[in-house]
Image 1 (spheres, helix red, strand yellow):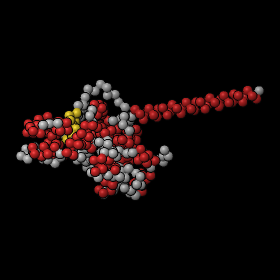
Image 2 (cartoon, helix red, strand yellow; image 1 turned 60 degrees about the vertical axis):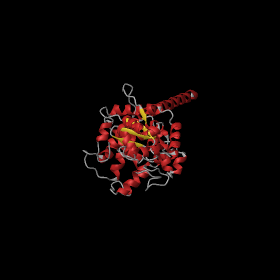
Image 3 (cartoon, rainbow, N blue to C red; image 1 turned 90 degrees about the horizontal axis):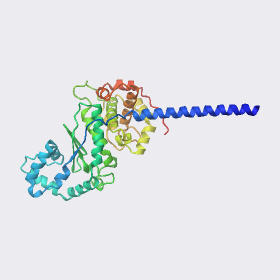
Image 4 (cartoon, rainbow, N blue to C red; image 1 turned 60 degrees about the horizontal axis):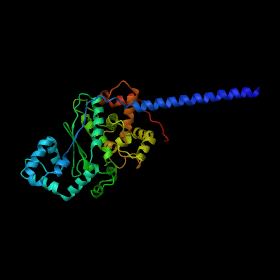
Length: 359
């Protein structure tokens, strides 16, 4: 008799444990699904295909013996972007009588030709880049159907520019994405924190961040005049990061932010401490430009935070505020978010209150 009662109690206990485990699994699944689907939208029916025009190939494979004709060809095929390119490599206007000599010198230079070969080796096929940019701009069109999709070009910049943005133009300096161990970057004396993000997998996220930064910039004309303080800047930057994550949902946030695995771990583990520091040291409402730059500018690490923090760690906080704001207000669209420049309202609406994290 006592055995039977004990057996029943055991069965009841086991059933309870199973139920708790099942409920936990369901909750975890729902949490994961919500997290995963926050950026997931259907873009299959959006008619768009990105084709990239490669200036570096047309430029370095042209005949220098017929340079005048070649210049006309480049002007006709690349239009305004060709003008921009000439200023990036510091040779001025095509109308100058010295221009043929300058462009001939650029493409004949031994180092430039070696860099071109390195670019062709790394980017012999750009099909995957075209597909990734097509997907990103399909997301862009999904959210902002009336916005312009730019013409996209690649070029060699003399290591002067990663991305060029102008009206209807997005251009990629491929010589700035040859890999973190590229010997040219070491020879140029580029610091490690810059070299860490000069690899081809960063191109799409960098393109989208550059594009949206020019579409929605701080104190954009027509918006209300904003106080140029730390809080407004980190949330503005956080909006841009959130938008880019929405446009390239397959990419990890660490790649978009430009953080290494250890730097990402630092931010996750120290989110509360960083936020507390900003509050306790009265930095959030500081309008000192140097203070703002130290917290949101590119650097080996973020001033005011430990040396193992990444540069722009405060932007991570801005992103977390925006992410929580959108989670708490599921009816808002990305247009609503990007047009909302009341950053105090976004902070309050997010209910942002980071907790200690041990993972």
